[in-house]
Image (cartoon, rainbow, N blue to C red):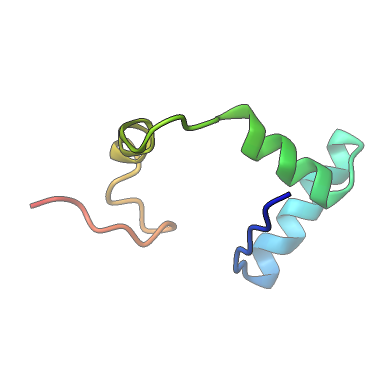
Amino acid sequence: MSVLTVRVSNKEKASLARRAKAAGKTTGAYVRDLINTAQFITAADLVAEMEGMMGDKSLRVKPRE
């Protein structure tokens, strides 16, 4: 099994814990479900997904110029 490490703030961690509790799951299981719901088969799939998020300040992605 692969390991994915993601840095989140304390506020984001608390929000994730609340969402997991509401779903009746552990935080780890909830995150795995989030990851598995949108599988990316190729890099083109990932780019297509990210284009809708370009410029989103919460993701710190700069818009294309």
